Length: 219
Length: 225
Image (cartoon, rainbow over all chains, first blue to last red; front, side, top):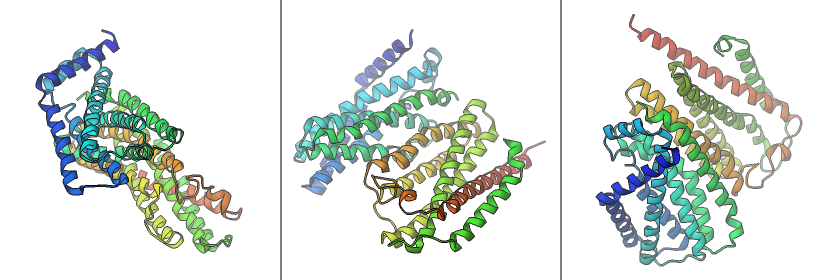
C-alpha cells in the first residue's frame, strides 16, 4: 500500500471504531454540555472578553480529555500489529487527521451549545468560525504528539496536562486574540497576521511530529 | 568536542571576561538618561542571562538530536545538564529583570508578553524534568524526553522571539519599540556589553560541562565490574 492509502485506511479504521462504540464521543459531548452549564450557573451573564476566554478554556479541557486517549484506547498488542504492517509516519499522520476531524466536530457542537446557553455577541461569525476551525486543528496537532509521549509513561493524565499546557499557551494566546478580533467585528485585514502565525506553527508541529514519531513508538 | 571541553583557555577567558565586565559595568561611564538613570548598568547583567539561557537550551536540543541518532548515554546526560543550567540562568534573568522592572516600570511583574513568555518557557523545561522523573527505565527515559525536548524547542522560540514582536510590549525591540542599542546605548557601553554576553555564555557552558563530567564520574563509580 502507498503511504497515503495507509493513512486513509487508518483514519477510516479510527472513525469506524469510534462509530461502533460511540461511548467515547458521547461522553466528551456530555462533558462539554455540562461544563457549559456549570459555567452558566456560575456566571449567569458575562461581557465579551470573558465570553471569549471562557469558551476557549472549555474547549481546551474538552480537547485534552478527547485527545489524551489517542494512543491508549487500543491494546498494546494491536498497536504492535499496526506498527509491523504500516509505517510509523502513517500512524501519526492518521491520528492527527482523525483528531482534527474529531476536534472540528466537537468544537462546532461546543460553539452551538455555548451560544445557545450564553447569548452570542459575535460580530463577524465567519471569522469566528475560522478561528474555531484553526483552534481545533492546532489543539489536534499539538495534543496528538504530546499524548503519544505521555502514553509511554504510566500515570497518563497528569503528565499529559503538564506537558501540553506550556506548549499550547502560545497558540492559545494567538487564538484568543484572533477570536477577539472576530468578536468585535474588526476589519478582517487586521487578523491576517494571526492566521498566518497559526498556520505556520501548525505546519512546524506536524513536520516535527512526523520526524520524531518514528523514534517514539519503538520500545 | 570532548577534547575542547578539557581545554582551559576558554574557561579562563570566560572568567576574565565576566570579572572585567562586572568591574567595567559598575565603574564605567554611562549616558545620563531619564527614568533609566544608573539602572542602565543592569543591561550588563540582565541581557547576558537570557543569551546564556538560549545558548544552553540550544546545546540541549542539539544533544537530544544527537542522542536520537546515536543512542549514546553521554549525549542524554549532556542534554539534561544543559537544561538544568539553562533553568538556573532563566531564574537569574527573571530576578534581575524583576528588579529592573520594579524601578523603571514601577512593578516587578508588569503584564508583558516577554515576561509571561519566559515564565511559560520555564514551565516547559520544568515539565521536561518532571517527565524524566516519571520514567523509570533509563533508555526509555532518555529517548522520550529527547523527543519532548525537540518538540518543545521551536514552540519556545515562537513564544520568546516571535509573539512579543507582534504584540505591545514594554521591552525594547518588541511591538514596534526601537531596540535598546539604537536608543540608549552609547559607544562606551557596547564593548562592556559584548564582553559580558560572551563571558556569561562561556561561564554557563563551563558550569554545564562540569556537571556533565561529575555525572560521568558518578556513573563510573556506580558501575559493577
